[in-house]
Image (cartoon, rainbow over all chains, first blue to last red):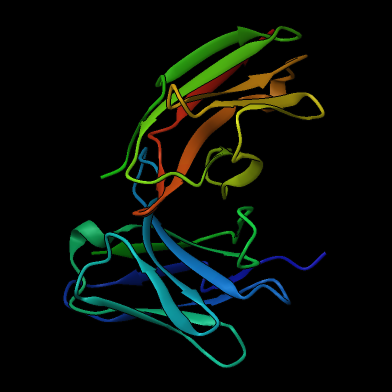
Length: 112
Length: 108
C-alpha cells in the first residue's frame, strides 16, 4: 500500500539558511499535518491543511511557512534557520473526518 | 490549553500484560489516540477512542473515560518487538497535542 512520502530524508543546513521539506500524502487523503520532534521529545504539532487550505495552527515559528498544493502535496519552508531547528520533521496524512494519521518516515534536519 | 501526562518509562516481561496510563486536560475534547514509535522511526497509529469504553485491536486495547479525563493502552502477550515509545494524543479545540511518551522496555 502507498505510504506518505517525505523528501529529503536528511538535510544539513547552516545557520540563517533556508530549507524546504516536501510531503506527498497517501492518495485520496485530503489532510496533511506537520510535526517537529526533537531528540527524546514528543512530536510537536506545527500546522495542518485540509483541501489545500490551512486548517489548524500549532507551535509553528513565524520563520516557517507551509502550503498544500493542488495535487495535495505539501511543503514546509523554513527560513533563517537556527541551531534549535535541528529535529525530525514528520508529515502525516489522513482523511478529513478520520482521526487515524499515517506518518511519513520523516526528514532529519541538522543545522550547523 | 492542552496537556497530557503519561509515565516516562515502563518495564515488563515478555508474555505479560502492561497498561500505560494517560491523563489529559483539554479545552474541548474530540478523542484520544495512541501511537507507537520505535527509535528512529515514525509514529504508527494504534487506536482512537472518542467514546467511553474499551476498543480492542488484536493484542492492543485502549480505554477512555471522558468524565475522568483518563485513558489507557493495554498491551497483552508482550513481545520483544513491542519495546518502543508509546504516545497518547488528545484532539481538542487546540488541535492535536501529543503526550511526552512512555518508553516501554520488554525484557525476556
